[in-house]
Length: 453
Image 1 (cartoon, helix red, strand yellow):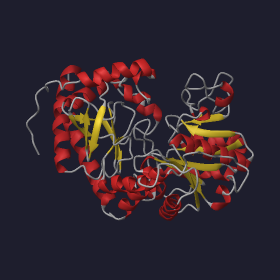
Image 2 (tube, helix red, strand yellow):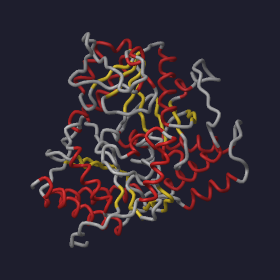
Image 3 (cartoon, rainbow, N blue to C red):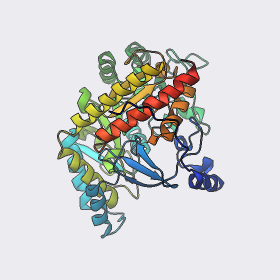
Image 4 (tube, rainbow, N blue to C red):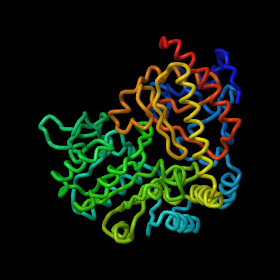
């Protein structure tokens, strides 16, 4: 591995990205179609991407970037994978949308049920649509109104899920256990009032909430491994508390939009031995095209229309191009039984290298990683001790922003937020690992000087 530190890099040209960003701001809120892309937490101009291949992106100015976002998770095989591209091209010959059933959605449903163990699956067009539909199903089946979620768990932008809270056992002004306020303008307090919030990885708080309110709760929705507060890994005690929720007659909904097929063929659910009533998927299940899904045992899913009374529909659900991409991706994952071990080995080596580089530069970080997901929190705490949203929120976001810019300037495209996971793909190899750690050592040296380490 190269040991010579890179000098402060010559700034890459960004004129085309800057021009596109200016044009976009005139016609799109904030110039982007999803907030984290705007670089608000790290500064600078977001890079507009022209193409993607393997482990790399090429921006509008022609700069090649080593990518650790992978379209926020779907590209586990790498960008523009030949099998996925060819499957989409084949499907494209026969049309782009039917508004009627097709064979590919049956084939993908058969594959998903076989790999995950659910009995039934319903395809939708996004992760938000999947979680929203699963919660409606839980309410329809149980006849209850309230749901429970955890601080820092993101489940899409449906009104009832854009809710977080303060701290501790989380109370609102009148002291109602678990109550919380909306975290977005435009979410009526009445919606927020139906969502109870507590702390991830705090089994005592969850038990207390369910003891007080469990008879009113339709479902608890959770990320098995959190990716949207940075990577948070559940403790065995917390996993046991999750299962105790079911003793109150509430359904357990695992949001695997990010972790599904990412951490194993059975997702985080299979890896951790969870037994949820419903699972939500997105990202990898569509191979990079817009797809979501939710599924579970037949006795629950048969409440969905037209079989049952819970209505849910979508014009583009089961889109033939998306089904083709999903089939190709999941088939490739199943055909490569060693892939998950390789992903885990790369991510562990990346974590070790980042830890050593930061320590040598006198920069405090705490790394959480599992499978091919990793977050380096910029705070002074032992590895593995960041377990809750409150722990993660103590990170030095300004230090992270400076480090992010140091990595970007050296050609490494990290997630532009302290509170996100990065994702490793099957085409990240030794050359990519060495280049990443070379850049990281130099970026940490620069950051250490700025921090006075």
